[in-house]
Length: 108
Image 1: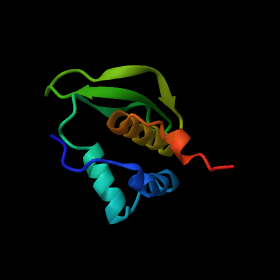
Image 2: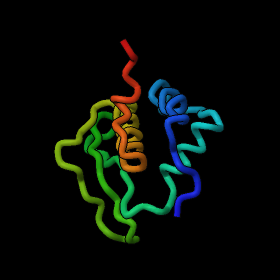
Image 3: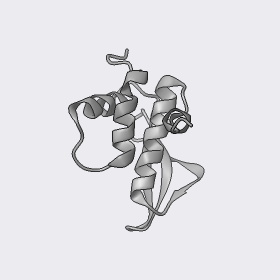
């Protein structure tokens, strides 16, 4: 039962997140993030610390409390900001079915 539905009108906020994934977010971007981080998921993306401050792996945390986090094969990051951007793109695709990289590519 989703409240707010992400649409193409929210691409401005996606660009904002890609520019600054951590820190202050505008009210519009915060609305998008609240939807993405809501409770109506079968799982949530999380970052697993592989090496403190230098290496992370993408994981999927199931909705069931106490269940094990499932690492995503081949999804490792050496930059925390890149990891946050990737999770945002994955959530966008899960919610809209659209590839955010394609949508944000500057038109020629």
